[in-house]
Image (cartoon, rainbow, N blue to C red; front, side, top):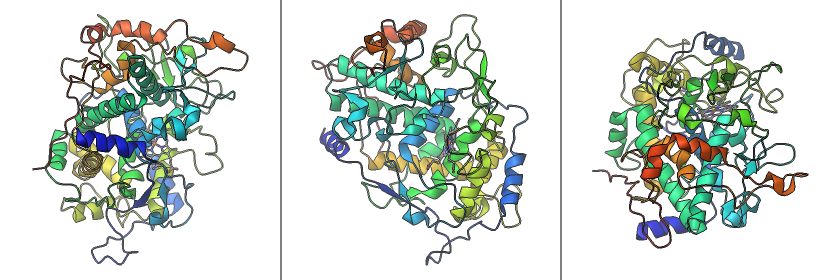
Length: 497
Ligand code: HEM
């Protein structure tokens, strides 16, 4: 209880900015155990490597992870790291860079500083909700130009992450409708998020063994030295390389719902429809989460949920055509090249050097005489060790250690009153449809659209119609309210032995 109160107090305070730093010091520092940076490659060499990564044929994740995991990973990253420095053209002193997000699993990307500090997000204790192009289905709240009203603009970069963000807004609102205070609803949502990060997302990407290994050691006992508890250092090995692994999980096109057919993530061809964000949600592209998370039920005879891409050295064509505003002027629209350039100018050591520092055998032949860029290395390691099912030893240990340390730093045991909708194993998909189970009708707040007036208020909730697809959820519906204490122990982080 005391831990929970302390946590709630800390969260209520202004988020502390985190500085970027290093997990593995390089020789530019005075550390005698420092590694050599891999920064000798020319732009042409890096562009050549990026070009070899263009996927010719999609390879599904061999252990069958669902497609939605990819975008939940992107959503997690946007909760953890924001490096606003433009694509670099010269060496960067990474220790001088500020992370624009709190380096914590606290959903600052969603809540900002709360209603007082980020009033543009809220109507009272609830989030503003906008409407999709049909005028009734929920969407992110938007400005007249279609841009979303968010503290984390990247969460409207494509329609998949935008609709994941929307699920969080709707869940918070549904909990407030159930009688929770703002703080309680926020804490419940964050606890449930942390639960699925630790128990569902992390084991799927690194394997349970790596999670258990990280859980068996105390904070700072490994390679990650967070420094301050309130503003842990954000390691560039993680943000500029290893956790960018998700770029390889991105598929080229998705059946976003059963009627949409396969729609490309991005295309620079204006005649091709795509899933770019930054615009009012077209109602024919409302996500059917059942297509994206295998834990959610399927209709009889319906094809299984979409599979995610393998974690490998291939990148889908969509990510060679980034349509993000400002990209053309601020670097390449080839994401692989942007990652490699950032790794070079951030003086990241090679994957081989990091493997050696971790006491692990280097896997594969070096791509350049001096070594393999870390981002490429962890992708190839995944490809060679598990056929792309999950991270290999270097990537997996780094991600598991950072995740578990951050979860530990941010508090211990949590509990949550969300319904456990999947028979005792509350998973990401369950969280994303939880608002529907709670009856989220989005009626408390919406963004008034110029010229639309109150007609914009949802009168019919398509999302709720979709919840007919989750019959199990309604049976298990057990909701916290002012009168009952939460009964479900969703988030229990074991203490290190
Ligand atoms: C359609 C999907 C995605 C797009 C279009 C996208 C695009 C981008 C872009 C443009 C950058 C900045 C590149 C640079 O200039 O250095 C970036 C950074 C990053 N991305 Fe993605 N990304 C996607 C999915 C993902 C996924 C699935 C993950 C992880 C699971 C991920 C993790 C990251 C990380 C860690 C960064 C660094 C963020 C920072 O610290 O500022 N991304 N991404």
